[in-house]
Amino acid sequence: MRKITQYDPAEVPLLADVVDCFSGNDRTLLDGHLTNFEAACDDFVLAVPDVHARRPIIADKATRENLSKMWERKPAQAARLFAAMKDSLPKEDRSLCPFCNLSEDPELDHYLPKGEYPEFSLFSRNLVPICGVCNKHKGVVVRSSAGDRVILFPPYDLTVEGVFLTMSIQYGASALASKYEISAHTGLTAHVLGILKRHFARLQLARRFEARANAQLAMLVRTVRGWEVDVARSAIDSWCKPNPFELAPNSWEPVLKAHIRAELEPVIAWLTARRLLS
Ligand SMILES: [Zn+2]
Image 1 (cartoon, rainbow, N blue to C red):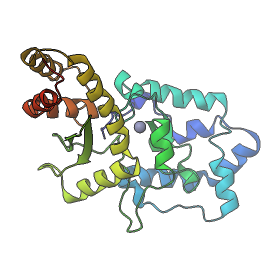
Image 2 (image 1 turned 45 degrees about the vertical axis):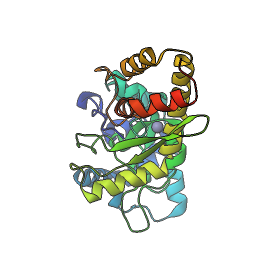
Image 3 (image 1 turned 45 degrees about the horizontal axis):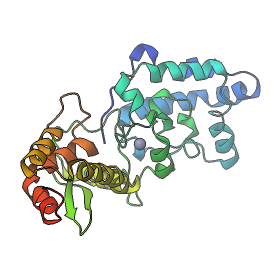
């Protein structure tokens, strides 16, 4: 849901630097494919951000599996190269997952899955720091059956300014509940909107955002319980004021706060009707 700053170019290892870390049979296997891999990596850079449209270059299943396992077998020296690349990101991009904007201590994920595309398993530009939950939901799907991109590519996607993540409050009998969705925005083309919606559904972001927002709403209700109406109104309004240090605008929390502020009177009316305010 958020474009991440790109890695410091000085810290992005070249494919040849990574391959140099390997020895023995692994090195022989990599060397045998190196020319093709380097050409594929050049094509990857040219295809950005539509790298999902690339076709795998290794047809043989056994070779593909062997090469894809190279990531797990990488020597410590190669692991250090990738760690330096991740560490070169600004702190926010290191601690927040760009797919969900949740703070989950991201791990490096292969954007094009290594099982299908072993030619990019050691290619630094194919690695994006994402959280374990998004990684699990993403699985190995990068394009729909129609060939459209399913998942955003955060180092290069989303230059759109403006809020496309929207939410509404459901006024239940005993609790306030949130509902999140992706909405059309003047800065969004139909193409990007389609990717956003597929990304949102694939990573189950509505459910994950709603769990957090519902907990926040329950906390808010508990906090103001018994307060005078005007004091509660003022406290809620103050709590929902935009924070300049807050996360990207398309994160669940700023969207929740902006919505409560816009719907302050219905929220107060709901609290009053339930005799939660004095
Ligand atoms: Zn995530």
